[in-house]
Length: 368
Image (tube, rainbow, N blue to C red; front, top):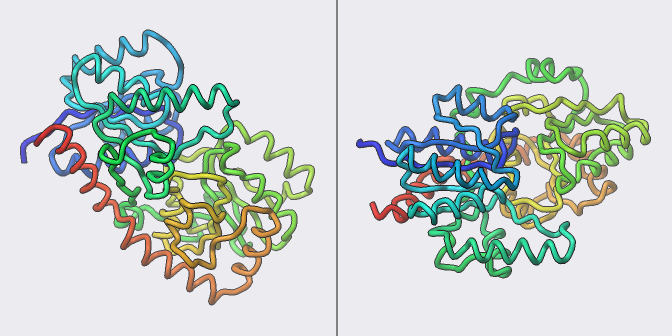
């Protein structure tokens, strides 16, 4: 098969998280189908090393800051590399990528990995939404990672129905299974006692993830240890909260891990208390590994877990404490939820479907 591309994948972060992990899976999978990629984004995050280790061209570019020179550097990069299409991910990357693509005259594709604007003050929120609508006019295709996100974006006027393509986040099941550690080894890596009941989560430590709800749930239900993989602006606040609630000894903050899923076998239950998601990749990874999942009852979690689902709860600490306790105490329920999750993840969220969807977007944009 002849090489197609190159396509520039433009990231707003190289920190461990769903967006960069999604791009890595897409790049590796589509590279096997003959596509060539260049990846650009801010330095400092562990995912930059993951791209380089995989043999992907990685260029450091501060797309997470407003710097006029960044746009100029991006235009030069596109021209020097002969980039035929720019695919951006995240707010800053979406702005730089679509402006640069317009200046150079190549098509632009943008993926929303969640629509997060509610916490902005009123004028800032209005300005952000107005900017996204303007950038939409420069975008060949907007990729939505879930049907729920597409409906919200259409309601906000961020893109037209003709522009939108839903490409569900997917996981490489074979690669995930091969990388997963045995329970004993995963617990040793996280410093967890082999006999403890463990609830785990991997997420960016950001307010939207509401990890404080899980810390409060641990205080209400003393029967489990809470292991959180990740880092971010909420880390110090979570430590203080754990100390105030007296659960520091039952809280394991494991730090940022570029690919956290191989450690998930350490968990008895995976929990996600986010107030909003695009389509939560870590939840899908946990499902594919056969874990029971307890998650906040939000549109993205309903789409991933299916409805009705015994793993969905209202987003209060009390609700999480009660449901986590019942799942941990009932081995049969835990096994049933895990088996249902494994089947659903592998049938509905396989990376092969994601790759086919993205390939179709690229072929349409490039008129191949």
